[in-house]
Length: 405
Figure 1 (cartoon, rainbow, N blue to C red):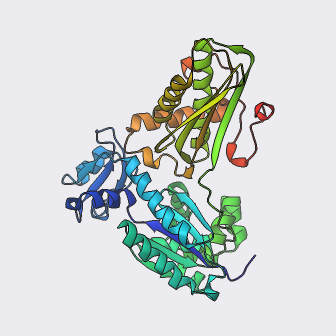
Figure 2 (figure 1 turned 90 degrees about the horizontal axis):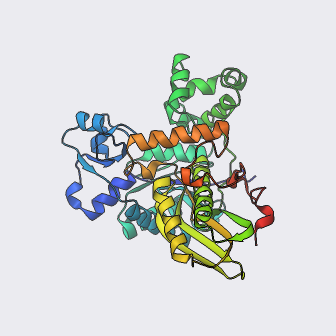
């Protein structure tokens, strides 16, 4: 492990709002909310002007409107946000040898060793300026020896600024900040820490790691390390072609449309669940079909980043219907989702009302507890069980390994 690492964390400021403002300058300096526009909708993103009213993401839209009646509410367009995200990715890709895209608006860049040529801070500043000049989007960054400190520094740099934390000054930098700033400290952990009188990172730094472990288990050890600026996790090279897929070869070639559509629905639905389970979004859907004469056809379609059944399933079925030639016996069908990024449901919030969001959460909890097929669409009930498999651990699903090409 290189002891002189230089890790940059870059985060686009109020990304969805910034994209909308590039398209309509009348939104500048005004409170803007993006999300489901009905009363049952959820806030996906809000401008800094809206935040001064106490509004935050994932808040019910009805409450947000009550807090700020003059706010401008937009449904949002994930296709536009995906396009801007890719523009920023292209700038970073051209500028550095190693970067990790952790969501549509967040990146880690490893500049270790680059100081021999340019000076890491200067290079990071130049990349930031290039992104602002080429896309028009505001972006902030933190630079330090590791991911945790850089991410926290970015939060302190916002809006539209940069902070460098020199090696050896991590603890004093973190010390006065709220424990809520530590990555992985969510609302529940934060409340537990507050109940113990722990509100500043300084307090955790002064505690022995054993005490944190005793109260919070393994999580407590991780929180203590992050509070002390210790994080050896590497920047993982981002690859756009990352994908998950599954195939089904029939024991007997078939033309049974009901059977075909049931199996395709079950496969597609299961993979969408795996996306949500892995906190991933897909922006490319591919369908594959092989006939009894071994002629194989595939078709793909780009979509706005999503991990929602109602956005992805219709695309899978549409591709199937375009490729399926009636009267021909089918030997194999397959579904693949590619161009994956981290992001969970965030980018779907401006399409979905809280009713749909709650439904997905409830379905996924039942699947976690009772198995992948505990909740399925009626049309997919005829399909045989699909294995319980986490595609993000690598390797093909156990029941499908011998069915690949």
